[in-house]
Length: 415
Image (spheres, rainbow, N blue to C red):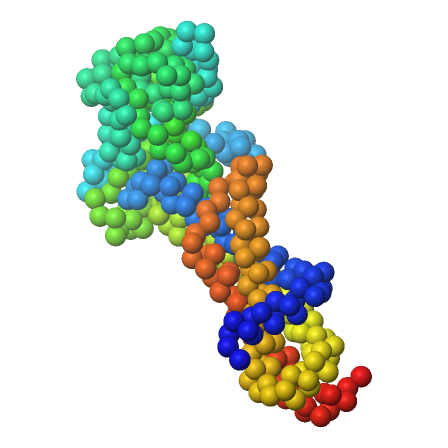
């Protein structure tokens, strides 16, 4: 008996009990869909972390101001304030002067504000920084130019817009040369940054990363001299150090911490983070998540396989007389084996196909309604589909073998 005849007989056997066949496929359908959906969520989270690390810089060390009041440590603040006033430009200059591996040191002062352009307003983060920001943070200009060292020295009121800030304030108009009001100060737009496309969040659950496409950048001296801040606020919110040797980031971070501890007299009013190390921690956690979720999805496939075996064993008993007649008419044992094995494989492949469609749709729904990033990789579909085929063959062999081993005489006598 050729494969076409075997497949035709298998289709007849499956379509004669449509509801039973559908119920048998459910375990495979949901198992395959769960595998694809879980892996797509994990892949989306992985790509998000990679984009965040590119945004923060692969060879950077981040020194952030730590506001102890956020952690309920007001008593510590009062005792430490006499010893350290928080991050300052002098800290950045000291790191640049003392630390030989520091290629660039970029101080930043950030504050939230409402920006106004014509009748359009936008809640943004204003970032006062230096021209080295472009190199340190791997940013590129979409149009115009970034401000220069002369703009910083002269405390000029110029600004560069993030891509989202540009769209919110000017829509499709060219913003170069236009004016933006921040608090009571007017700034002239001289450039727009390229869209980075990285969402906000935390790397490794520690380092806070926001969507920098919404930021507006101005010279650091302009921020410090033209805007008023509370007396107890630190001069800077962050210092980013770009290291020349990315292989020595951990050692470099130790040196930077030693410099900061000495300057701040042992007061821990700052936090140091290495985005690359935090990314590795995040990816390790993500791998554990993927394994756990993959095992849970695999259990669904296992249950589906058990369902296939159960139904196929019942089908063998139900069709015992048919098997006896076929054997009496000259069918060989391998013909019976192949018929039931093909039936099992068809159930798993059809269920796998429906599961792939469902597994592709679920991440789209999650992205649409939950806002999570999901990425369905081709290898994920191939893996899930391959596993479903393996389940069909693996759990179908025993029932098919039981059918093939039936004695023709006993099968014909079976009622």
